[in-house]
Length: 265
Image 1 (cartoon, one colour):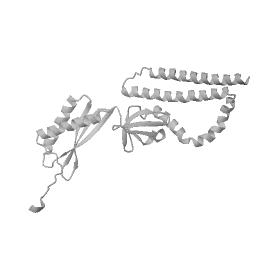
Image 2: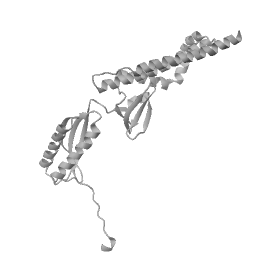
Image 3: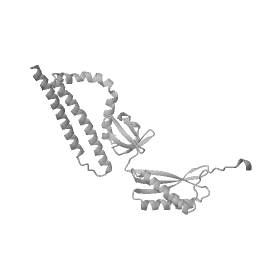
C-alpha cells in the first residue's frame, strides 16, 4: 500500500509537471502568434507591451497553480493554506512592499500609457530604448549596447522622449561680422530644402538670434519630424548648413591656438 502511494505521488508529480509545461508552451505559442494590428506604430507597440505583460502574469499564475496541485497531491491541505493567506498576506506584505509597488506600477504604466516597448526614454543620464517590460522591472538598452534594469516603482523618474512628433532646436554659431540678413536668408533656404528633401521632416522654423557669445552669435532653428528620426535628421540638417555656409562664405568661429618657437621670442 505504501509503495502504491509513493508510485501515485511520483507519477502524479510527473503528470502535473508535464501538463503544466504543455499548457505553458501552448499558451505562450498562441500569444506569440497573435497578429498585432494597429492604426500606427505607437498602437502596435502598445499592444505588444500588453501581450508581454499578459505573458508574465500567466507565467506566475500557472506556477502558483502547479505548486498548489503538487501540495494537494502530497496530502497537504491547500484549502487551509489559501484561507490562511489572508492573515499571512498582511505579514508577507510588509516584507514585499517594494515588489508590490513594482507590480502595481507596472500595471499603471500600461493603463496610463507612460511608455511601450520600443519607446526611447531617459533615466537620469541614461538614454536608450525600452527593450523589455515586466511586472517588476523595465529594461532600457543604450545605443552603445549597455542595458539598464530599473524597478517599475521608479517610473516617475523616467522621461519619455518618444512622441508622435519630435522637435529639434539647433543653435548655429556664426561669426559676428556676418550680416544678419544674409545668415537668415541662407538658413531659411537650407530649412526649405531639407523639408522638401527629407520626408521625415514635418515642419521647419527659423526662430532668430538666441545668444551673443564671446566669439559668435547663435542663430536658432527648429525642426519637427517623425519620432525616433530626430538624431538622423539633426545630422543631415547640420551637414546641409555646413555646405551652405561654405558656399556662401559664412564663417563658423572655432578656437585657434598660436604656437611660438621660444628662440624667436
